[in-house]
Length: 124
Image (tube, rainbow, N blue to C red; front, side):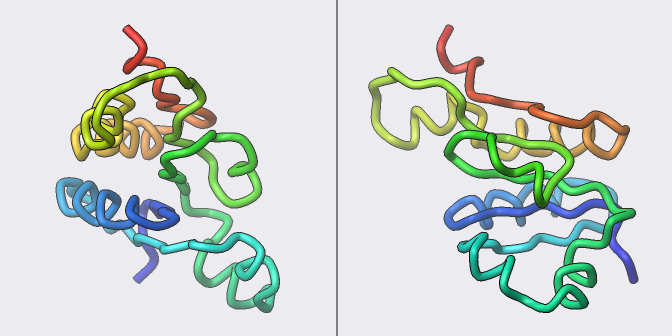
């Protein structure tokens, strides 16, 4: 069955996407995309089957949100810099936690597009 939402992660974010998907009361597909270049090289039929145009898609990457418009409609990332703390603390403050990703996924499902979380909440 077709998913209602697709979450795209690039590495360690895939586990976060799986955890968020389990909290949502929707059919969610989690896609691991460790290499955009390799994905681009795949047959169009594969790409459209994995990321159907009519299903909202949200990228989750602990890096900048720019560039994801090619694959996703909404983005969770980090567009700020300058924080200093242990890695897990920074990621949590920048929104890389299940609650924030789930909240952003719900916003994406309701039609919001673009950058839904850019890490700026961690700079306060």
